[in-house]
Length: 551
Ligand SMILES: Cc1cc2nc3c(=O)[nH]c(=O)nc-3n(C[C@H](O)[C@H](O)[C@H](O)COP(=O)(O)OP(=O)(O)OC[C@H]3O[C@@H](n4cnc5c(N)ncnc54)[C@H](O)[C@@H]3O)c2cc1C
Image (tube, rainbow, N blue to C red; front, side, top):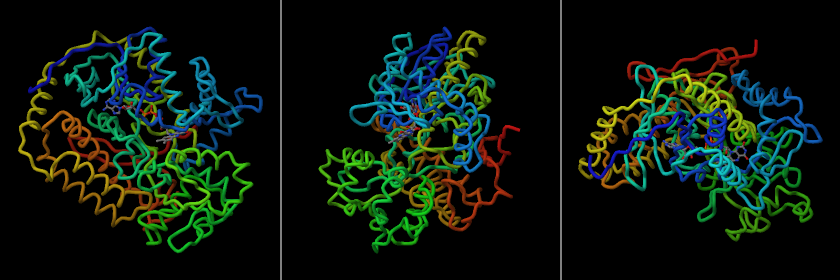
């Protein structure tokens, strides 16, 4: 193994990921008296979706900020998810969400509570950074160990049990063999398999791929939430939320326009209907699909909003504030906006205790599927990270207490070393440079498996992805450490892209975030089902299962 030193680490509970789910899981596992190590591809607590999030959390509270009745939160989440949610998980989310949110104050995180939401208070965006920073301070105070810049490449399975992971350290170049009695995947989503996303670049679906490779089931992977973001050169891809559009449409029906200046809200019935994430993005996606876009975008036009509204609307002021550094004045300039991959509703199938069904392996946060069904409501993701994080941490700790001494896995390390040597020894072939292949995958996914899909487009995507797997993947190479890192991300991206496209092809209807122009209607008779993807004898199997309900 060239240039790589091996280092062995041991822990009771290994947490992979340092977003809110991972850190919250770590705190809970420590509360149960076990050793906990967080490893994270990003610097710990940074450069993940949590750290750049808006800090909005959904939960039932009374007018006076006490814990409220969870039934409405449950009903809204299930109907927002178009009835494909695992209802037992939603019940847990609704019941435990408010106390997990209020508990943030114990970790010194300031929050403002309203009847159905709470916000992390921050003097400047992104509020999510306060969440990860303060959780991390608390976690370290109670003895959680952390190691950033480590990419987990593989989970180690002994018999049917996960006994640890192999990682690689971006800075020291160490090959890490981490043995653990229990492991929690809190690796976030996969927005970065798309050309346009508001997720950090490292959100490449690693946890989904790691789980799939050790025979866990993935559920609902066809449901990718897209949201409009600003799509102008040299301006950050600021999120234009459904609630922002809903709150400002009363000031001017033309706030969203197509290439010929028509009101998109009017054309798609969104002046009368409430604007939600799914109907907003489908309206924009259809305009683009039917050729009424401007450079793949539509126009956000706030120039006709009356002056007085800028004084009264906090939402308007908030979006303007996000653009101040870019010297953009929204009162004077139209901006292009385009769909960006924002959130994966699907993920690793889990039981109520966050167990994946594979002994020793748990999952929490965006890497875990089932809570959100076909479409996620605003604020539910962060609440889910806290609820599932705490559950995963507790159950992983309990499992670790009953399982034996952590083991070593010499042969897996040797095999990984040989694999790395192969990449380092391959000939340079610029067409197969890993970053270039990554870009190809992103473009294929954005164009054919995006916000609006068709059978034809999905077929094209699948054949392009298969071609990359057959012709380019075997020739990809590394000349330096960062290319090596890219190769491992690339493998995960390709696998997850194929899984999303296959699941989208399988679901011959439109529901929630999944819209197919060739099957534009929701088909309850045929499709009140969850699509499950798993590996059997090295082949990808796509099948369906009934939705988990409370009865
Ligand atoms: C711009 C933006 C705004 C948002 N605002 C809100 C909001 O206001 N309210 C809301 O509810 N939701 C919001 N969301 C969604 C929400 O922030 C995310 O779903 C949530 O933070 C995910 O948390 P997580 O802990 O599961 O994953 P993340 O925070 O994404 O963390 C994943 C971690 O896993 C690590 N990791 C990944 N792969 C590996 C690997 N192979 N090896 C080691 N480590 C790995 C990453 O480095 C990272 O540290 C927003 C999302 C975005 C992008």
